[in-house]
Image 1 (cartoon, rainbow, N blue to C red):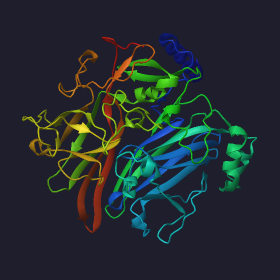
Image 2: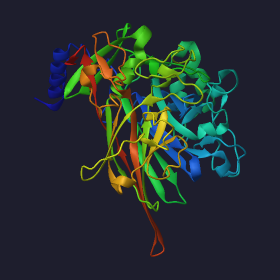
Image 3: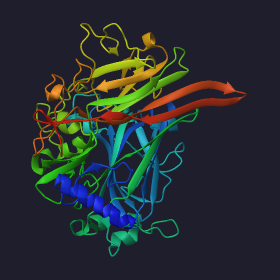
Image 4: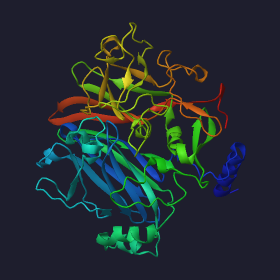
Length: 497
């Protein structure tokens, strides 16, 4: 049997076991890194840093992609635009702080030296920026759209971003001719958006897979470079998702199946492939949340009292705004929606987490603490309160984040690991058959499946500073994706399919 036939047989067997008609018609986190939608868990321009980003189209199909940047407090949009990728194309850009380039303002901006078409085009120029740029915008969280959080432009300096494929471009269309590179340059970016929107987006067909992406947080003067791969969602849509510039669509709650009544997630949990369908009209976002659900995160940490060694954990909740933001663009309800427990107000939306902090020799903190420091009066349980969070370990943030929670590590030495629990803060992460007080249960699927925990992504960043060695800057940095466990119950029974 050849490889393609073997793959087909395996897929057919899995589909028969779990009752799935078509493996492509459900959203899943592709471990191979290719997908229709890409989630990048972090960007920052704080303290002289820039964030470099890229997206690669591995296919022979040109693609229309929505690019969206979201600030870290409540994931209000700070910049949306359309990107047209030619076949086998790569698009790169740099997110920077305006003031670092001598431009007036306290917020972030983005420039690109790439030739791929964007709509709108980046047209602003400044002597300190090597290419036309676009400043990030505050309109989604100020004035009548204020959400109670900070209103300054500096709120745009840190967060995460996403890219959603809206469709493959029809080779017979004017849009294809506009954007197909010839000698490295697309011939007519100026007409691309009009041809994209013409006749109700007739120029695109349902998107294929094949995108991958990466980003890196760079500080040239400090010699640090934190690089990571984007999360790739495959099976995100079976239909076109055309939306023009100036639109908040499509977003992650546009996930869909070939069946118009459901949005289904495929999730591996405990070695079992779970198929979890949700009602498309009311719970589509739960399909994406199920894919990212975790009851525990695991990773290591390093620290040194003199600051020569440090770690940050980036912990991003990519769908949180659809559960806690009362705006009609998101949750649309005054009360928070499970699995999150508090709506966004006064700049915060907090969820209790459990902390299991260890050194490398099995020791843990022996005296009760509030977890994150400094401890408020009464030592309430530790919480994470933003959509993009950065956890520090005994010292300042190596990413210079303003969205931090700190863990005191001096009692355990200079290194160890952390189990961050989203299910049972009182009992070290035990699911307790799905009835723990702080279990964060999601809404049930059509099959009665309930995932416990929170939808999360992110990584640990580490930095080691040696200073100058023989006249050479000798700093070393690295990034490690979080490891996680999942918990799914149907009543009191672990989910089986």
